[in-house]
Length: 323
Image (tube, helix red, strand yellow):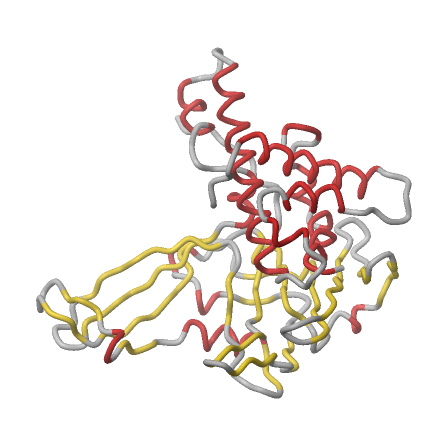
């Protein structure tokens, strides 16, 4: 399945079905024409998956369209599914954002407040997948504290153990306080010189669909390895309360809806996916052209690479006008 394995995860999320179909469909694209081809190809894949009568659907046309922008994905070698996912999210966001801008210009009867909202940087992609981290940075000498925000669509989290751990262990490792020393010191505006600092991250905006990238590939100098840690992740009620700023705890709990698995090592391997049908709530395994229903107990594996969680309760984001 290679890097396109995550595509089967998308249609299992109810909100993804609200993406425009046909030709309507953070990285600027080389040209609007190529970008619209990517969005159109993606829309056709989604349509074939949900409305087609074939036993399996090939994403080759979509992969080829994306390959015109990123030639590395046209090669028959292994590519990283997480990088592929980020590129796809970026391209779809650019296309949908431009589409809504164009539509707002064509409809002169739209209220001014709506025109401003439509012409913003928002899209169905950002409303579903975009979250925000807040970093508090405290100078250890004068204790002055500054804050910095960082937008994310995929959260890459470290694996603290080589053999066995839980997703909560990974999250605690990511969100624990870190100390910046030596070459990593920050410039303190109050001390007017570089100082050691304590840094802690928290989630200031939790996305409706949270994607975790488990950092299994580790490169230290010339040493390369894949961490085969057995990571336990919950299928329901993942609680993110400890990591979300108290005033922003709108969607603290999440349910697993899809998993991308990786078999092999850094130089080669194979991707598969587990997806939960949002209508029947049954889990399915996708391995190239082989699709089969699996019990809940089979969803937990030591090969998980990407985890897709949807918030509770889940609702399709709707663009609203502000008065």
